[in-house]
Each structure stands twice: as C-alpha cells, then as structure tokens.
Length: 110
Length: 112
Figure 1 (tube, each protein chain N blue to C red):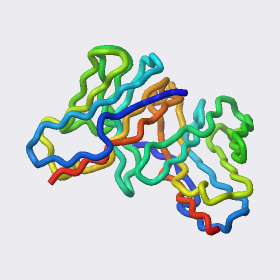
Figure 2: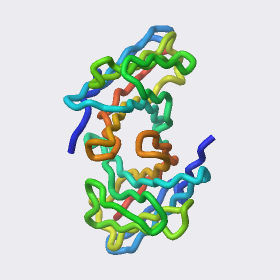
Figure 3: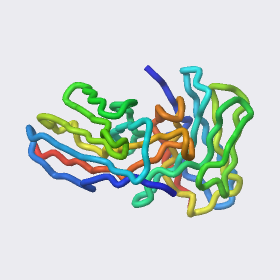
Figure 4: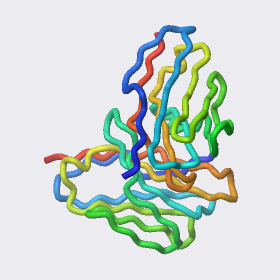
C-alpha cells in the first residue's frame, strides 16, 4: 500500500510566522504535489515536483514556496503566514494520473 | 482553472439503497479517478479508469469511463453507513495541463 504521511494533522500559527509543512512518501514516486482544500473552492494545486530539487508552480503558488532535497520528502513553506492561508493542506504523490493523498494538515493562522 | 461538473452535489439516502453520481467535462480525458474523503481526512483513491468504455469494480463500487471520454460514472450498491463522505472525480490528460482536474464533490449521507 502507498503511504503518504504529513508531519502534523493540526497546526495553529500566528500571522507573520514562517510555517513548514512536511510530507513523506514511501513508494519511490518521482512526482509529489501540494494542494489546499477550501469549502466551495475544491482542491487547488499549489506546487508540484517531478524530481529531486525540481519544482513547478501550480495554480495558486503566491505566498508559498517548496523544497525537495530528497526524493521521499516534499516540504511546503509559508514564508509569512496570513489569515487567508487558513486551510486544509493535502500532500499527494504518484504519477500525475494516479495520485495518492496524505491525511492532510488543518492549518489555522490567527 | 478548469473544473469538472460533478452531480449531484449532495445525496441523502436510506441504508441499502443504490447510489449513482457522475462527472462531465467539455474536455477529453485519458484517465478518470474516483476518490472518497472522510471528514478531516485526505482523499482515498477508490477506482482508476484508463480506457474509454472501461467498467471497473471495487467491492460494492463500480465506475465507468464514458465512451466519449468526457464523462465518468460511479455507482455504489447496497449503501451502508460507512459510505458516508465526499466523493470526488478527477480527470487527467497529459496533452492539456498535465495536472489532475477535480470535480467539486458529491456529499453522501446514509440514514441507517
């Protein structure tokens, strides 16, 4: 079974803080993805990576950056958290046509 | 961005009933996926479809890849309370953006 894990299930941060969300997969997948999910807006792609040290912007990259130093790990970074980044963050890995999701991190920015 | 039209938006059914939901698109896809998401959890991949006309089952779930490649259907037979959740369709075509395109989800509630 594919296993995608995310470092935190729930996170509360203050406005302006730098936030790191970590994702690890155990299936040696080349591709990893970060999404956010908001009511009424569905799943939106923030960034993805198709190889170590490679990254591509998704549909809503503003305010985020990513890091992929090792194949199994993909990090999402909120450089200066804002209240409009309060959301459910979902990591996925796998080929683009068959993605497997982690359990999600519910981030609240106050 | 591009989205899929998923319907119905929500369903409230009696335990034991069959359920049908579908996704349509103006674009052609090479792959259709169906996910289920429980409250507070990440989506879980239920079924993947790779060929037009393909019919695939996973237990009480059956999904079909529409012959036009612009739609897909998911059926759940003899629903049980643990079927409660949000069901998402997703389409993929490497010739387009190369990204998964998601439907808005169908919320299913099952009355015991």
